[in-house]
Length: 422
Image (tube, rainbow, N blue to C red; front, top):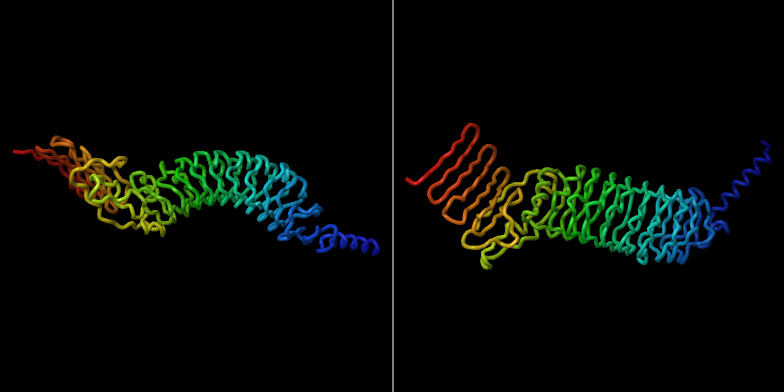
């Protein structure tokens, strides 16, 4: 190849490169800065009210954040775009098809656009390579059921601080590769059975600072890889049906700042904590309230309303729960408190029911527990059982004419008795 040919070729390459040098108009729009490698157009914080015309078609990164852009139109962005930042603008509408012909797009940031209050169902259709979608602080009260359809490559979805009122079943069904889902700071009140269906790869789920009062017992089914779950600062009083049992990989859990009811509705949650070693925040009891000596003699089903449902040692991932004296059963006349269940969650504390028949259960430290029932009259029906440590247990029944029972203490030491008046 001749020297002249080489010089011409070099000159052509230099001219192509100059097209990306700042100020080399018309390739770089006014108020923007362009870079060669990777091909980048930066128009941030330029007080732009619209996407500038004449964006280089080969640009891979477009930075348009911190402007006052109000609308997005189809054809504004080139097919080579990989990264598109549009956060902190005044976007209120997105024309159908705006992102349809961006097959290379991997990151789209539309966050912090407080005038963006609704999205068309097909807004993101066709973005098969999209990996990160930012929609935080956009005041979206709801999302179309098909909004995330076809986004099979999506890994990060930011929906926090929008004002979402509900999440419908199968909303995320196509997001098999999603690993991070941020939903905190919304107004969601309930999680249905199929809300997280399809999220087989989810690692982190943030749901704190919502208004959650109900979680379906199968809401977390299928989240076998979830390691972080935040549910703090909601309105949860209980988690019925042990929904956390579907999370075998869970490592970090935050449940604080909820009005937990430490009556028998807490049994599934307490049992789950006893068989797992998850790092958790303190879970304090908010109800039932302690009643004074007045009232009608009703006794709260759990006498630890201000205590911790999860013992302090469990917050550090250890198993030593210590012990606390169990409260004595109720005395004196009275009736059953409406809604007060009998039986109590495992752990430390007691539950009982009063009325014509008085019954209850108690537990005091590991291995020390019991239940009793006291019949309404002098006839048969008053009975009790207790267990204290391995191999030490007893049951008995008594009435006005006598008593009988059986006991066992250690290996090989057991017996029964019956006592009747002479």
